[in-house]
Image 1 (cartoon, one colour):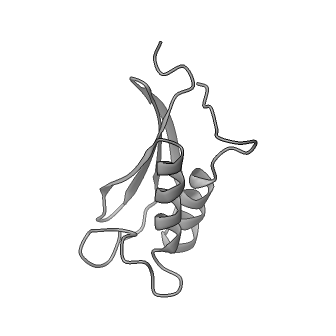
Image 2 (image 1 turned 90 degrees about the vertical axis):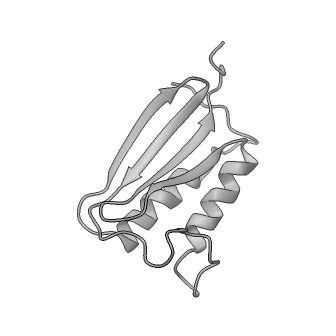
Image 3 (image 1 turned 120 degrees about the vertical axis):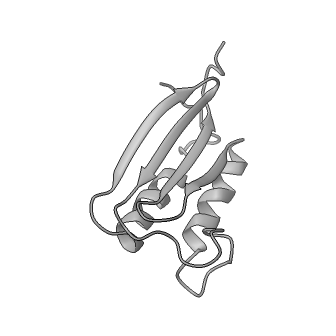
Length: 106
């Protein structure tokens, strides 16, 4: 799977997601990569209890530590033409990063 990155460095959104799972989650961190149509999809999951609050993980702007990483990862994803989704906020949460594949399915 190929991924075209803007500028000279690949986007750091994936590293932020893995770091967040290690820092704020619990247990093993699982990273899966798959191709879905014209998207490269990266799922990051951990064995923790999930996101606190209203289920809008990473949208509050943070309390000095929490929420900042997901907001930054979301901004980086959008800058690369991608998206960041949180399909599972409860126990064993999953955060999904979707980036356009280099060949866009052509």
